[in-house]
Image (tube, rainbow, N blue to C red; front, side):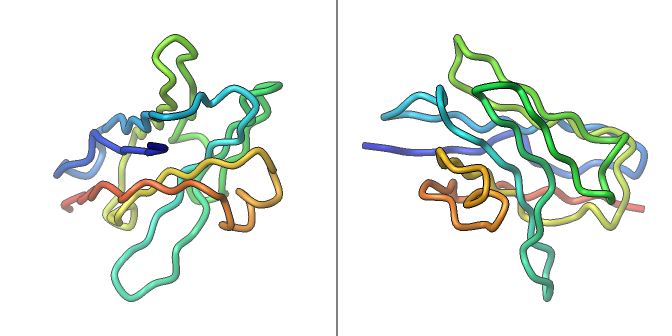
Length: 123
């Protein structure tokens, strides 16, 4: 069974850090683009960061650039999102998604999605 599972969310104070993990089962991330997205209450889901596992190309939204870092561990078939200098406005449910197409991930139409993990940043 193909699955993506996020972990690492939680409650943290502003200025703190969290590392989210996105683990895949039933397939490998080789040849896939993996993205992180988030949705805050009452807001639309937005792109946060993407990584193309084929060539390492990364993308960051302006709101997280310089604070968040996306990376992957091939051996563990896991993609990480290191989040530093967290702000209350980073509070959201964070989802990972994967698809062989960069454009589909960018357009939030990836074939595989995880159930999400809650990140709450207190002020």
